[in-house]
Length: 116
Image 1 (tube, rainbow, N blue to C red):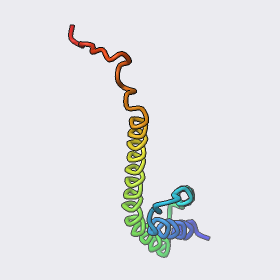
Image 2 (image 1 turned 30 degrees about the horizontal axis):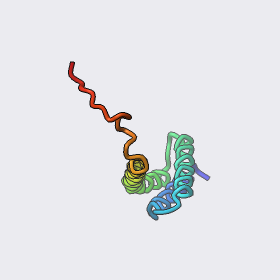
Image 3 (image 1 turned 60 degrees about the horizontal axis):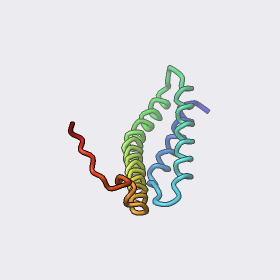
Image 4 (image 1 turned 90 degrees about the horizontal axis):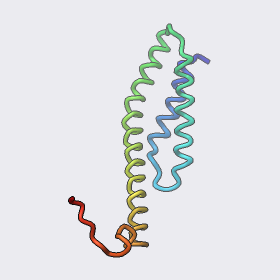
């Protein structure tokens, strides 16, 4: 099977996977499959020949069009994951502060003047 056709199939699978959207719960299998598809795609890109027939050029144009849709979707999903992680970090800090509200205060209640 020609390398361009393999790349087209992998890109279609990636497009279908990303188009389903990032699940709200149980994201690990989704992200693992996404990484697997991206790794396969990278390997297929590296095995591409230098000269292409007309059919391969047409398939390449289809790959480029799908990629124009895949990139913004991946960027949006990445931002969503980053946002969720920052929310979790904030919640963790707030929980620690709630559990021990006097942790950051000095032990004896004295005030230290920082001016000299």
